[in-house]
Length: 92
Image 1 (cartoon, rainbow, N blue to C red):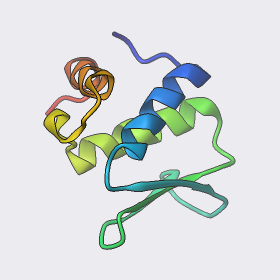
Image 2: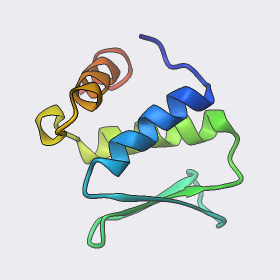
Image 3: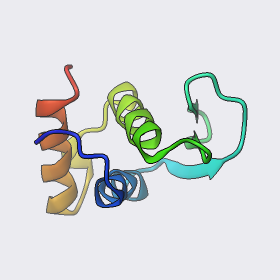
Image 4: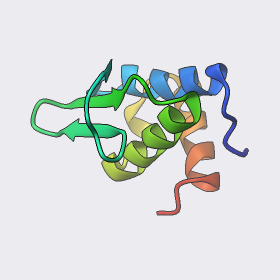
């Protein structure tokens, strides 16, 4: 599975955050990398003015940084998507 820069793919990434302990928000701001992670409050903020490609790349970077575990997700679709994502894009 290669990264697809579509709204559907972005929705799947957003669903991972919705099913996790982290809150995903799109806000305007001056972020160097396009995102900000506030670990203590478990908030992920993405620059809302980023194009869809930038949002997807930022979310993939954050997922790698946070090291989500597929077993932490109750829905099988989220577990499978995270495993596929790890195999193709997340090299850890």
